[in-house]
Length: 113
Length: 111
Image (cartoon, rainbow over all chains, first blue to last red; front, side, top):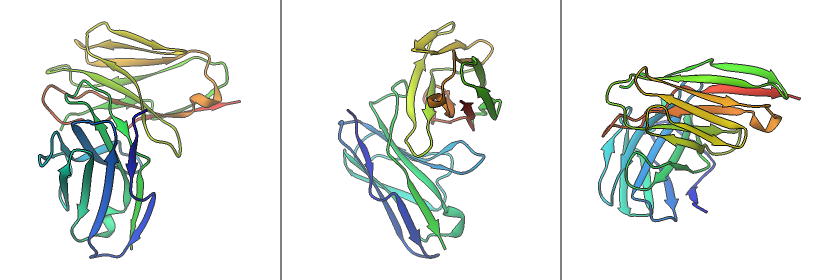
């Protein structure tokens, strides 16, 4: 079974803090994605990566950065957390190509106070 | 940004009822359409990936059809059960572009 894990289920941070969200997949997938999900809105793509050290902006990259130093790990970084970044963050991975289904992690609910 | 609509936003059905909902998307530059089911407190799980106009996929009591010329896909659930309660998301990524998910249809099946 494909397994995508995220470092924390719940996280509480203060405004201005630097926040790291980690995602690890064990199926040798090329593609990895970071989304956020807010009430009334669908999943919105923040960043994705199709290879090690490669990254592409999604629809809402502002305020975020990412790092992919190893194929299995994709990190989302909030350089200076703000209250409007309070959200559910989901990581996903897939084989190369947008035709392949994505496998999602359990999500991290981040609260920024 | 690709405009993806899903309707209805939510619906409540009785156990045993059949139901269907819609995903609408711009028909130009179509490449594939994904359906996902997202149960509360779980991760989204893929139901179908559809690529061809007229495609029809089935998994148990759930089936989906695709019309790429007019830009819509239907998801059908036959004989709904409480365990079908979830949010159903569609994502029609155009070729070479980012994934864009629709806002979802939240289904509640009442016993």
